[in-house]
Length: 406
Image (cartoon, rainbow, N blue to C red):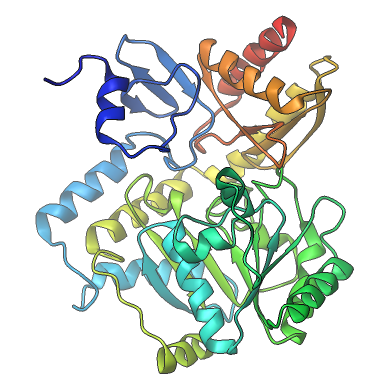
């Protein structure tokens, strides 16, 4: 007999460890724009999910998916004009010489492939990542995700070295990481950085990326920009987190928001890197880059352009951070971020526990946010790009009330 309680039903069939968000889980039945509706009719302001990049249930994306599904869906072993057109359009938004794409289904898969490309091309096996990075859930990307490993109590493998932030995203930190890799008998294949430094507490690396890229290249490795969370205009009109620096990455990875919820991800690199990988490595995915996913991705780009969503991200994100900075409360520390990616540092003893209480209290006040950082003490605000100043006011009012009651 199927249990009536939705949580019991889930727990019976899902694997242990597949955690739910919030102490009182959200029972979602529908979503539109920036609102999620629960089974009891409660509407929650979604200020956390970056997957519905241009809004939940976006009609243009839904129509594109339905129309393409009714026409053709197959794999990239066939010539399909719409898939090539989407690849061309995405590449046109990136700086030269990034000109060659591999499709994937998720950010984890994209990063896994990027890691493999770097290892194959360089002939090295070492990796450098930030101290609390999260890059994915495959075996290879989890090994380079200190945040994920911390949940299991597992140690980083010897072929991975970390750099700490803030304050240590600099050349001496890379030198130290290279030295540690060398002591373990490994040479660097790549330095990978989530360009909004989300899991490390949400920081803007700014121009610091360029000298780091120079340093890893001098050591024989490649620089990989993980744009799974920062990309597609979330950080503003520059579109990509690495764009504030003078550096052009050797490899860029994309995921989550590309298809507005449809599984779509990609790796973009230079032609010479792709050719060297293909001489010694192999990659194919049946579903990656299928025509339906490509149609979803094209629709996302269309909506972004038509509504100038990257510009809105800059404007509304700045408005939101300014409003939060005006909340006078001793627990509120630094408010940081770019575009529609905001981190609010919670200070004091047991700040991580306090942040947990705030996140859950916000849920009870009808607003969904998260927490991040090594101590889980940074409120993570990452709404769809259709978030407006009106929505920001709702969030700020709820946060002020929650902090007052803290």
